[in-house]
Length: 115
Image (cartoon, rainbow, N blue to C red; front, side, top):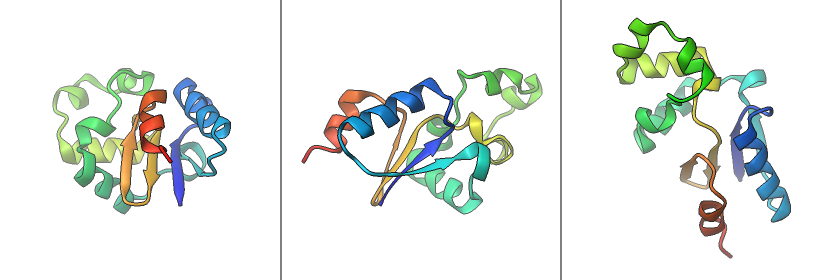
């Protein structure tokens, strides 16, 4: 089962979804805006790739955070911020079997889905 996590109006998500469609790869799309993110799943992701990889510090949601939250960020507070505001999670997150990939680059997807 392939699952892609993100929000539909994100440009990077659009590129990832287009790449998957062009390569006839079926996947389930998990929309953070509609469904949020499950805490257990998020904690598993943090164990696999680290909270620093998952937390998008370049986006608008990060810029909107209070400065005290940003300067004091650690794993526990990052997890809480991601649970409260899932669109701050770097996109897309691709779950493929037991693998987890964060972000999109066509060359990386080529490698991931090499048949």
